[in-house]
Length: 287
Image 1 (cartoon, one colour):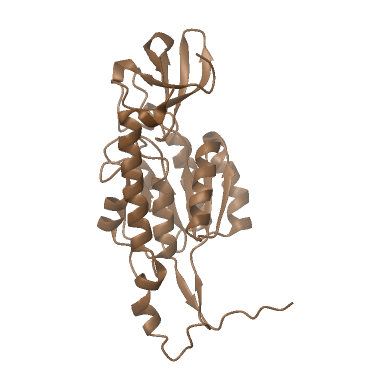
Image 2 (image 1 turned 45 degrees about the horizontal axis):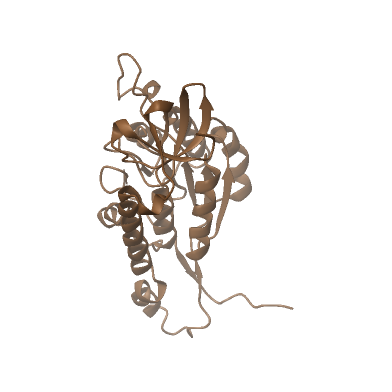
């Protein structure tokens, strides 16, 4: 086995597909292929996967992803979702108004997930800037990036997980998590920059992250209420929903959570106003 190989952990029944990040003698550092999980395992516990698409776990995840993408397209398809809102501008010719979805700043501790996230933002026409930054450096990066980018929504994500082998593990303590403290530090910087949770929407966390600590520090939405694995695209889905929910509306929490891949144990949050606006008139194009 070598770096980059796809594997599953036999002791966990092959429930998650991993990519080998680093081989350390008899131990191997793993990153989830679909889930934002950072883990380690003995080399002898790993089984190579040569055709990931044929595995039951991959097929199950793919089905859930497809459901979420269909839900996303349905609920934020602009001609349908904003028909009533646009009706209020009936005196305006259809060609003259324009849309202004919320801008996203996305910080990700995984370069592969960042690439997938940016592709989805682009496909959904969400203005977004993404940066691959180690979780431990995110707070420092936000000090510079927030005033520079001036986003409506900031996503702070990467890898996390409960430290299983720690003696006297306490799930209420940040020291029991791989990266939750780093995410909390980053959320704190975001709230020092903008205290109003409706002016800057903060989405934070990864697999098994300390949900309560993230919300208490200032996140609008966070993972994970049930300390479960969350899919790589769940933070992106939440950001897109915030970007396309009208500024006069509160994001429907039940609809939001049920639309994610991970569900109610994976993500949650508090009432938050959307960041989508309509403008008039459309800017003229000068050659």
